[in-house]
Each structure stands twice: as structure tokens, then as C-alpha cells.
Length: 151
Image 1 (tube, rainbow, N blue to C red):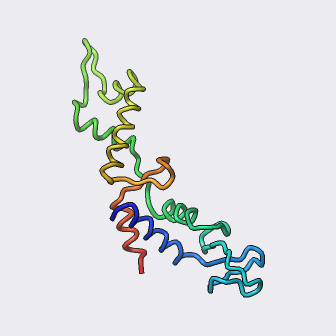
Image 2 (spheres, helix red, strand yellow):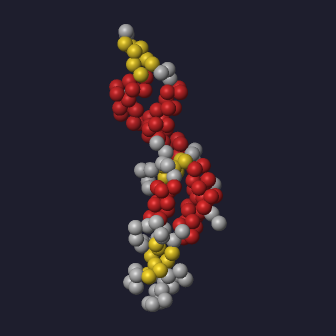
Image 3 (cartoon, helix red, strand yellow):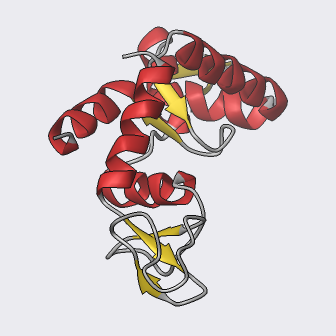
């Protein structure tokens, strides 16, 4: 699935898991039109949500937070580095953990390399974010969840 297909599928699931809601009359409107005021400018509400809101982006975010574990990029990057370099580094007569040494001696370089790793994972479509990079999810986890929740 590409990004557009994932977005469409998530919106479809969000609409299926929520009900139209008229805030003015404070009632659910499953037909999409308020029976009291005839408005079709309705919010969405779900059984699990804290209250009604316009659109479904908020609902998608809530569903993902409850159902999926976000990717811990720092742990994955550290594991990747550990796979590439020896576990210990000897400097003179002292032995250090290589990853700890890298992080502590040049934290700026470490953050730059982590950022490059994040960019690479995103460009290869292994991870995806719906909040401008604050939280990432594995694409295969999303695809699996979408498949399990689609009708």
C-alpha cells in the first residue's frame, strides 16, 4: 500500500467506527442529517472518544495510539549501529561500549546520523508518520491493522 491508499483506508475505518453528531442539538445523527435542526454540518463521535470533533484526523490519531505501538527509532538505530561496529572499542588501555562512546563523545553527530536513518526509513516507506514526524509507525503494522479492521 502506498501513502494515499493508507490514508484513504484509515479514513474509511474512522468513518465506520464513528457516528455523525450534531453539537447544536447534542445528539447522534446516524443518517448524516440532524433530525431536529436538519443540519448536515456535523461532527464525528465514537464510543471510545472523549467527545465530538470535526473531521476524522483526530479519530485516526486516537485509533493508532490505542492499537499500534510507535516505532522507537532511537533503539532501532542503536541496534543497527551495534550490528555494524564492534561491541567494544579500546582507546589506549581503556575499553568502552562503542555506541555509548559515540553518543557521549559527539552527540551532534549521533543526532545527525539518527536523523539520516529516520529519513532513509521514511523514504524507503518502511515507516510512516501522521503528525509530521513526532510519531512513526511501521507500514507493515499499519497494513495488517487496516486489513483486520476493514469490512
